[in-house]
Amino acid sequence: MSENINVYEGLFILDTVKYNRDPEAVSNQITEVIESLGGEVRVSRLWEERKLAYQIKGQTRGIYWLTYFHLNTEKYKDLNRLFQINGNILRFLILRIDPRLEEALVEHALAGPVRKEDAAEAAGFASGDDEIDAEDDE
Image (cartoon, rainbow, N blue to C red; front, side):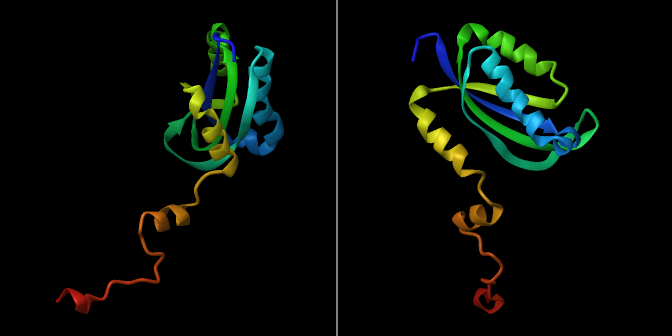
């Protein structure tokens, strides 16, 4: 990889109304913007839909879209501006990541988000079957 090319992670919150009308067109805009600036998209996928902590542009829910890509550092400012003026994107965050982490992060992104049930089980919480016996506490 050239020294002017960095690996980036982008997390986008998309407008649910516009996304639900035409999911492919809305999500493809992210890839199109990156590629129009000479970038290479490694992964671009739906992460999840969730309730927002606060309203953004009148929306209470958002589509979270995750993307990993390569881009020339000199094009970053243009990329940022194009995403700011895109009406389908409510918010976004782009981070430069260490190239040594790229493959692991791309694999994780391809695997998808962790289901809530799996996360609770991994954390040691019961699924409801294992109730605490009140008599044991006495």
